[in-house]
Length: 102
Image (tube, rainbow, N blue to C red; front, side, top):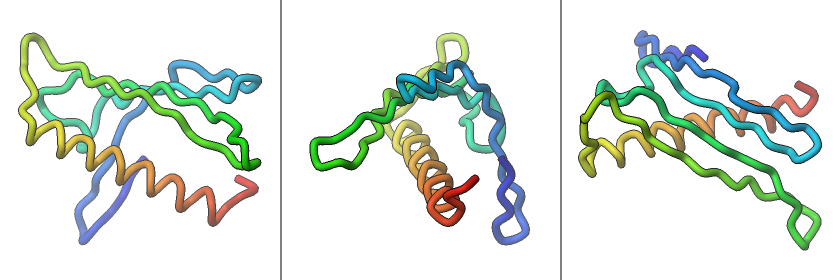
C-alpha cells in the first residue's frame, strides 16, 4: 500500500498469513516499509469478524510486535506504532465504506 502525503511517499509491505472465509478470519503481517519502526522485524495481526447480538458485526484483533534481535520498544515507540496501525485501519475502513463492491 502506497500513500502520498504532502509530496512524501509512505508505504507498508504486508504478507497475508491466513484467510478463512468460513470463520471470517484474516491474518496478516506488516513486514516492511515506512510504517514499520527500525527496531521492528514485523507486526502481526490476527483478526476475525464476529456477529453481534444487534445484527451488526465486530472486528476482533490481536496485534503482536516482533523486535529485531534483542531490541526493546519504548513506550513512546509502542504508542507511535499503535497510532500508525490505527491510521492504517481507518484508511482501509474509509476505502471499503466508499467502495462496498470492492
